[in-house]
Length: 127
Image 1: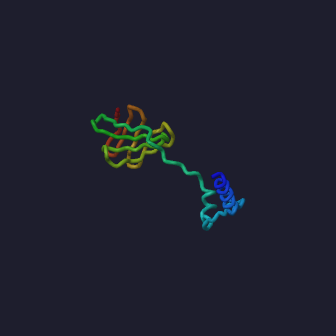
Image 2: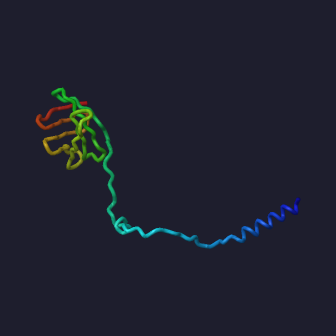
Image 3: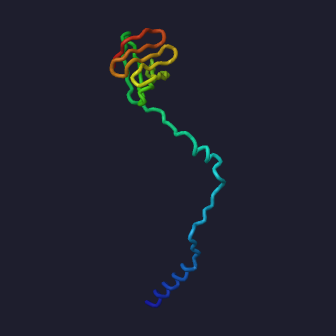
């Protein structure tokens, strides 16, 4: 029995020594990336801001306004209906009023703000 085990060990070593072992693996690839230089020199990508807070305001005229304040503190999304189309408002700098074409404006970002929408004058609104 011991003779068979030693014979099997010698045979397996002989089989493994017959394998072709090279120092460097062969890498097979496709054509070079035609946009490699453009991608290497591209400007870094900036992700859009995420929602920092979404608030529902009750205004002086008893209307509801929905505002999503973004994490960059320069962007807000305003909706006059809960599932309505959002209007993007921008501020020149953080802390400045958010405005958009057409007469939209939101002053402040806390629980008490002043909101102007087209066709209405500015009114105080609170959460």
